[in-house]
Amino acid sequence: EVDLLIRTGGEHRISNFILWQLSYAELYFTEVLFPEFTLSHFEEALLYFGQQERRHGKTSEQLG
Image (cartoon, rainbow, N blue to C red; front, side):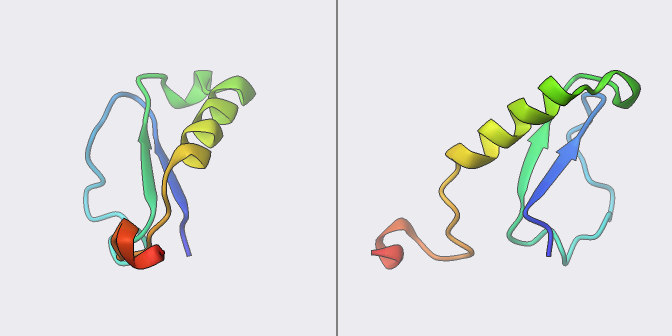
């Protein structure tokens, strides 16, 4: 299962790419092109991911 999809190059689309697997994934978009995507960019994406409320289709109230 995919938890985080990182999309580089400034594109904000996924173009039918593993749509079913991305149903509960967090999507992270960056302007940085892939060849220049460094460890610090990856860490930034992980920080973003860590700040998200993972509900897997539920509401915040249902998580209780």
